Amino acid sequence: YLERMAKEAGIRVVSVDYPLAPETQLPEILDIAFAALCKIADDTPDLPILIGGESAGAHVSLSVLLRMCADKARSSRCHGAYLCYGIFDLGMTPSQRVFGDQSLGLSTEFLEWFYQLALPGLTPEERRLPSFSPLYADLSGLPPTHLIVGELDPLLDDTLFLYQRLLAAGNDTKLMAYPEAPHGFNGHPTEMGKHCNASIIEFLKSRVVKA
Image (tube, rainbow, N blue to C red; front, side, top):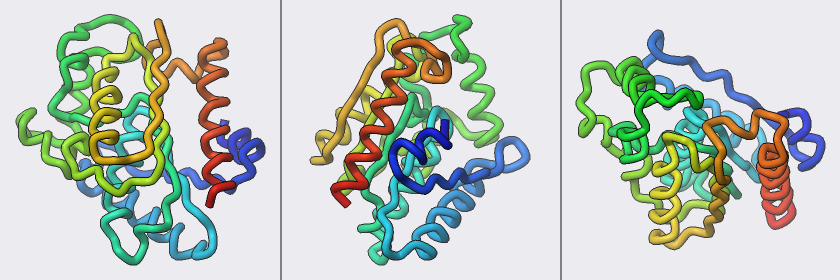
């Protein structure tokens, strides 16, 4: 898919192989991902930067985007972000808490286990610090953002809440919520998956042209 994205959107795609929990905990993961983004920005001073990811990758993308926008020297470099069914509240939104053990790729128990690996020993409220849960950060001044989620995803509220907060902060934001679609639905050859992936490519193309 990254090859298709590069070809059809006419962009250079860099995939960052950041470390994972439990070997590496979340603060260090985000530091490494941000260092990679800064290196890309410094090595391509004349090119616009677009950032994006899916699930935990969307969390990492938004977290490092917020750091980039807070950096005065680099704040104008990022021209857009696409975030697919991301984890934006590690304290757990209502849809995460009530989802239970439905077999649609994720479960409430799995998400809690995952958070304990990434931030061991912290309470749900402590995991809501903006540095861990970007839903609670200052979201003003972000570039145009393309949000995608399936309505059968336990992370549905993360995207819905983020959409409202981005709008309230005055950002150019688009939301696409797909009916009867589970977590990771665009990885399957369904019509909704194809539509989702095509919308990402069109968004990236539009941001390259406007840059």
